[in-house]
Image (tube, rainbow, N blue to C red; front, side, top):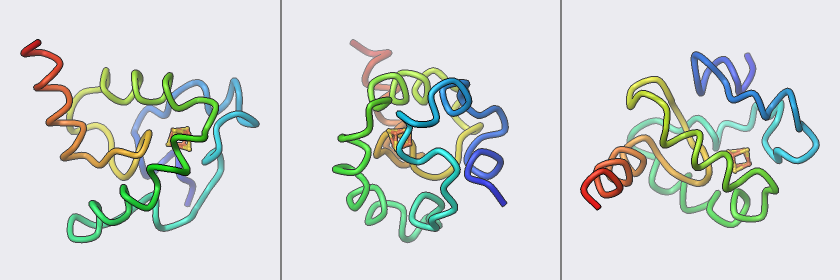
Length: 93
Ligand code: SF4
């Protein structure tokens, strides 16, 4: 099982284009794949990790541009629910 297949049906191209810059490329660490009950704690744990990733800004932009139910797990330090709220906030602005 790879991170790409389980977090997104269409993984971002930067995982192939810049794997050395994407800190999670190839990871199978379960913290990236929390269930709904542990998602908030996982995202909190990954905020710093993702914040230091060289692809963070591109990752966040990509994650927020994807259809709401096409992504699972943590991307750019955000959970599915957090991305949904961020999208609504950005659309309302
Ligand atoms: S910001 Fe986080 S989820 Fe996005 S590529 Fe980097 S480590 Fe992976």
